[in-house]
Image 1 (cartoon, rainbow, N blue to C red):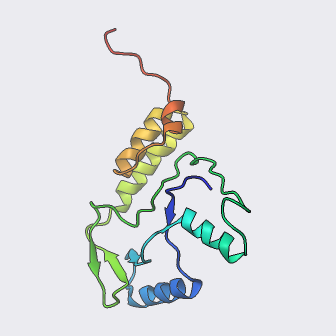
Image 2: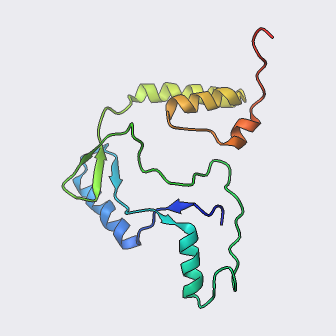
Amino acid sequence: MTHPDMRRYFMTISEAAELVLQASAMGSGGEIFVLDMGEPVRILDLARKMVLLSGFRPDIDIPIVFSGMRPGEKLFEELRTLEENTASTPHAQIRVFSGLAPQPETIRRALDDLKRAVEERAAARVVSLLQQMVPDYTPSMAVLRSQPRREAVGA
């Protein structure tokens, strides 16, 4: 396991398929739907239950080892952020994002800027552009450590 507090959402295939079909039936084109997937499950609890269901004792018969989180990995999944508004739909488990969508030309310009920064291997600019495009993006420590140190201005 990566971390003892890691949490993820789980749905059965039939639950997910039903919600996706319901959302596709109510869509008219271009909407972004958010599915209610219940409460996130702590992966450690799930691992322990699976060990028990296999007839073994967790941490005794089968050790649970923590390897550490990978770069960019989050402890908790976020279906939406506080800045993103959703509206209800006729289905209690399906919401739709509301608000203005970015204009295609704005997206194209931002992607062109990002492509240029990548081609120039300007890592700091890539991170900055990503933060502008996705306001709640926080680079991992691995990404920040890979950034060249900036010299103090006027030093």
